[in-house]
Length: 83
Image 1 (cartoon, rainbow, N blue to C red):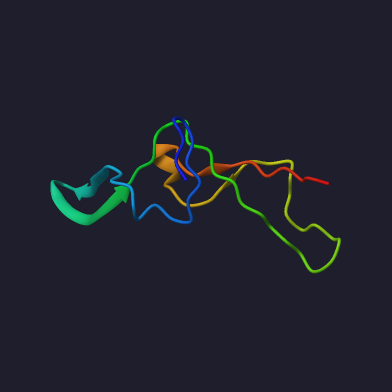
Image 2: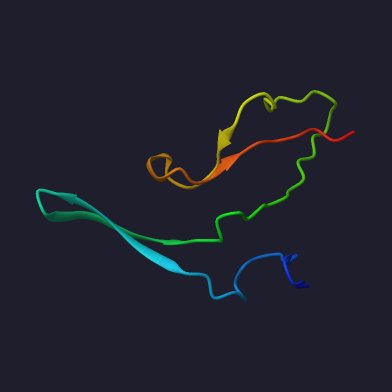
């Protein structure tokens, strides 16, 4: 389902997202080549986390990095508990 500003999808296989090649050089020699598929800057992702008991072991007071590389500032997540 795609709206003018929003999309609800299970995965991004149907979207032609840009792919950026990244390379780690050591004295001009390639040591690691990888590719990253990127989403628009203001993208917001939602997920649900269910636990078998009422104890929440995930800290909701900090920003957590999931995926992405810390050096390029991607993949930061803030979790919020809904009642």
